[in-house]
Amino acid sequence: MLKYLAIQFLSAGPFSTHQDDITDCMPCPAGYYCDQRGATEPTGQCSPGHVCFGSALIPDPIFNDDPTGNKTIIDFGDQCRSGHYCPAGSSNMIGCPRGTYNPDRGKSDLSSCLPCDPGYYCDGTNLTAPTGKVGLEINIGQLTANSFFFDLIVNWQPN
Image (cartoon, rainbow, N blue to C red; front, side, top):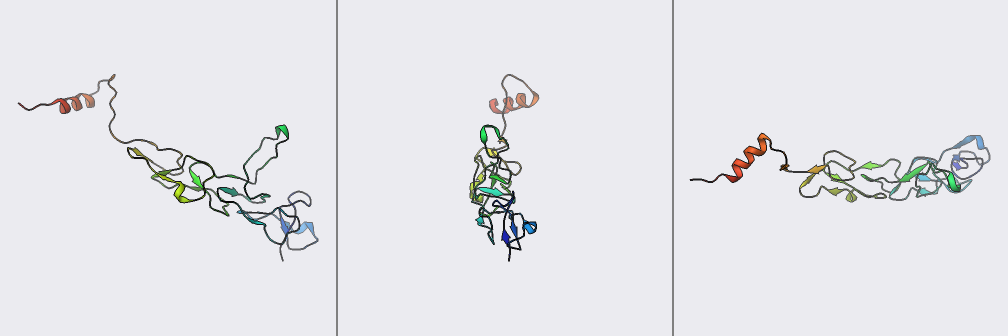
């Protein structure tokens, strides 16, 4: 029987196969959190919109590596980043596929990845915004061969 014991000496976090031997402790598995000392199984899955890398103590971690002002360091998980989504029990962030983007943090499913906006293109994965505009743009301040011929075509009038 597995037993969840301590990340730090006898606190919540890892588990053990022996109820009374701390040397057999193992970290809480990725995608789960363990908030009870001495538990025989993980407390539950990581919350939707969050990722638990392993040894998570809470279901909805938000990464913090700044201890100033008595802040708690949290390095066992994070809120799902923009350009990604994280279903319940995520151990890794899943990137939005090509042709989509996600500008928001903390999203939990593929439907959070929005189709590229009309008139724009999304080239790549894990995008937080469309890559650029589709179509021809001419800077009036710069005359080039392409803009010269474009002007001839647009302004051409038959006799």
